[in-house]
Image (cartoon, rainbow, N blue to C red):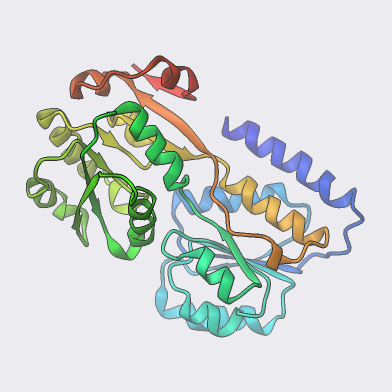
Length: 303
């Protein structure tokens, strides 16, 4: 599937651009990658392979002390467009690049609010919309009263805030436990209390294998289904996810629109599409009966 996506990106995006008489050149666009993680590397590869021009690259590799200098260097070169993958802090970005057309991939910022204040900045969230996530949850568990959430506010506070806002007009109660490290997950689960489902945002703390095992052991022991942030987590034993599946395409679509002449102020921040992935064994272990229409709409089912 990933290879097919790459092929489609590398074929159709260049055709789209050059069929419109592109007058952009090599070095007109900068791509700034926050961390050297598999997730960010995949997004970076899709963009580079799907784009017909040479893009100047900057790698922070998680070294925040170099952030101001790197952003300042990018600002000094007057790029026509800057793409930032994994933006985790807006202060230096807004200080140096507030007037530069800018695309952010970020889970730690309210992109819609940034776009209102700075019309030259738009972006893509690295998770499916809270509405899609909740609709899936509600379809699986009708009599839902309490949802448990464990998260690191630095990485996923915005996503949790948006999820809470999305269900604010329901009677569902959200029970939150904040943690700063994956080692705290066991304690957070212990004090979670009586919940009907554990919802996990797209937070890097859940990529740890020990963290996954701790959560899944809790899930099966207490018959609490888990809405996970990734396909890998569902494959390991979580009940379901709406894995974001079109992040690279969304970013390339925005780039294409700008190059074809659309003003970035008219391009609202967006969510990627979600790919529904279900684990039937996890459903049996947690007592969830999966409706037929949900099974039929799933992209992948683990048995």
